[in-house]
Length: 112
Length: 115
Image (cartoon, rainbow over all chains, first blue to last red; front, side, top):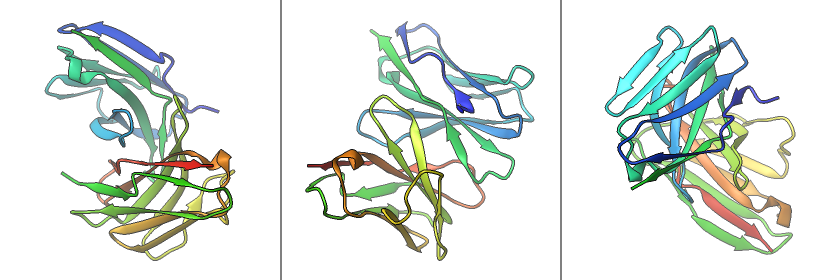
């Protein structure tokens, strides 16, 4: 049972435009959400996070939106750059924070 | 920023042999370390969680006698794949977390190929 779902395996965006990566979750006990970025043959790197008490968190070009009622979060990258091309993982922690559940990832291609 | 290293970055071994992978937090003390496995084009699968000085907690379906985890210090955890078989070939990634943070800092991963 996938508790964190990223239904789009890939996304292609033109440089300078907005990239929107989506994530859905099923467990209402999740209270902290994270996005990680991963390049091939490397470990993921932390990108941005959001607590369930917020609905938006912004860091430079990256903004994460959380809709708790819909159990949905999204990552917006604007403007998108070719260097943003990578796999993006959505992840969620439960209230105890002991375990992080990862989605399957979305591969983003930013075309120059 | 927090840096986690893994060694080796890639290893090829023969079926039946054992392989040890090291995970080190270089500039911070990690109260908890995690071991993941990633198959091609798939998500990170958590194998086990280890806290310094205590036994690792394995996820369902992960054989603890096959994947031995030792977390001897706040900066070092090791994963030993015992009696490796070709189906153990995968990308193994460790991560570390400090107690006050929920973010995990990942190592660069180890590509294991069992022939």
